[in-house]
Length: 370
Image 1 (cartoon, rainbow, N blue to C red):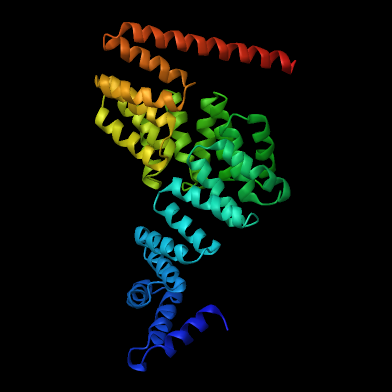
Image 2: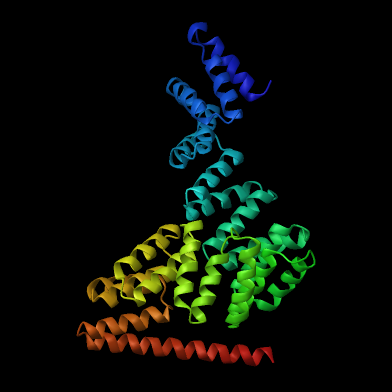
């Protein structure tokens, strides 16, 4: 007897027939399986009031709510179910609800737990890799996907995700090997996207623009394609076209981390500081604590003349990221604008020291590679 059948039997033994939870459970299951999620939610809610500590009812209610697109409520039910019983499938459903609601940080954290429980689950690997890419955590994606791609070279999804991560991390040579594998299957939006991104990273914006435009023609819904098309247009001097492409990217995915940052930077350049802040704040919601976004927020505060706020945010950022040279230089300028010349000069001296150290490390690395 499976768990649901056993549960139904237990419910029928403990309640009179006229208000049988067994019948209600059967109705809810039938409605859920038929895609009538509103009916299923209604019946599960009645059951959960009577039996709040039954794992199956909580998890099924979460699934029905997710089917309705009510992800916040679904998350609450999944979490209550997991408090009652650990279950990788329900944890994956929780991660999917976070993902679909735009909370990529929580989705990533939850998927990492599922991956630890089920390391061979390809759905989990692909979703986690996609989350890493959407959060611009390219090295985490590379670490996750490299051994998987070696073990499963014919998995096109993993190959594409890995190639994207490598290209965005600046590992063009390795990324091109991945592109070649994808191109063996013929021209595709994915191949054009990777070529365009590689060309963008190499500074060949004209070719990047052409390949990314072709990718859009082949698949306008490919994640990130409008983002990098917009970036290529901006680098080519087409600000109007670039802004339009970024708007399209955000229309397709309001939680596109990179597009939110790029739109914020664009608006700050036109002195639309409140508009810029909206995009930066949303980027920080997508990826809480991200140092780059925190720097953009502080820079916008400085541009607005909100110097005490900018100084406080930069000080907090440098405390967390002591080698963030751009933040140190920005803080030096803010201090000087505040009339704190000695503090400003101290920060500039620290910036120069870190820059010299970075240059020396680069020279040593160059000698070692010869």
